[in-house]
Length: 500
Image (cartoon, rainbow, N blue to C red; front, side, top):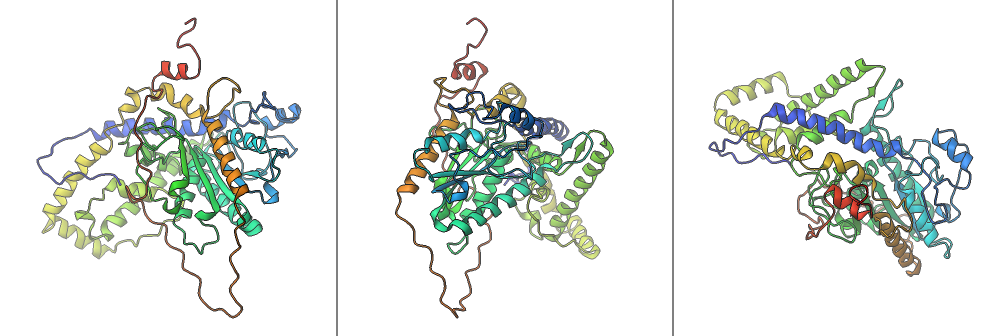
């Protein structure tokens, strides 16, 4: 939760709200593009030792796939997705790198720097090729759009996230029905896909043992460039950068999945290593994430901005007037706006206050409640400044220069270069999980209830809200990691300047 700091009337710190909002809007648009570009530039057969050019086994089909004209389904021979493998990787990639009608087992050939998660799935299959049936994988079909189009509207960012979350859940449920306990799942998400997996992990980790799919069915969770990464969590096998996800860097309750989650985050990747206090930035992204940006119909964009802003304002007002404890709570208006602006999952409609209730509330605020309201407003002003204090860091530190590159450098597109890429670490991790599952004794299927048993099944628990510090992976001690342009180039084996 964003802070509403002290109700101390002597605290006079201020930050210019107008300047903060303008900077946040600029940063929000840049961040939206950052999340979108990887898939936009992307879309390729993964580069592997057996396919160093990333063209697959049919270069002509690869070129057709680049323009969305491919017709063949290219299922990797090491992919046992439809045979109830020991481990099934359920992978969801980043923005513009998938479609709602994508074939879940098709190794789409596009450009040599994309189909990002394929740089883990295909090599993981090759690593277990000598043990048929050990590993399989599917790609989650979803729109993976961010609302930007030339003429015809495409799904918004939040619509894409909602679709990805629903589709991924259905795919796992269906596979569990077909395969029972013989298959365990590795959930792999990158960028926008990591947001989808993160939300699903919170859900699954909170489920009771009687649920159809529980944490016992999950072998591991890998979140790459996650915009909800808790600040300071480890990056695979090393201490991670100190920042956190730009949408939220607070610890979350992953319940019984806590010890199975791994993050991969590179320094200055703004998606997962953003400064802590960027309060207006995620709000702006939530608003933009509900809009269509159709270049030939700018009027629609303006209309939708007004509609979304009005909806957020109305829901915020309804909450403030209907919650009698709001004036004395630590919850800020920014907290409320962040919550009601996220429509990736259904929000309960708050009852709109009646005219009489609004009149009574205003009368109280101008009369006996005036001291409380004044203290709340003062706390809002101070808290707003503190909650947005780190926005200048987006321009003062090399996020602009490094953020885009760091968001791409998780994937081994250059085999045998002597560098241990994050994708290679994930391949080894998944291979170990698959071997452990393959060698584990069989698990007995739960017995069916006897005939005539009328015992009601256990009610599923409601997903718990964010609970800072509870069951979240602890922050790791820091070590030296690349954080400047020169250090990043050096880590890639490249000279910092030509000729050096």
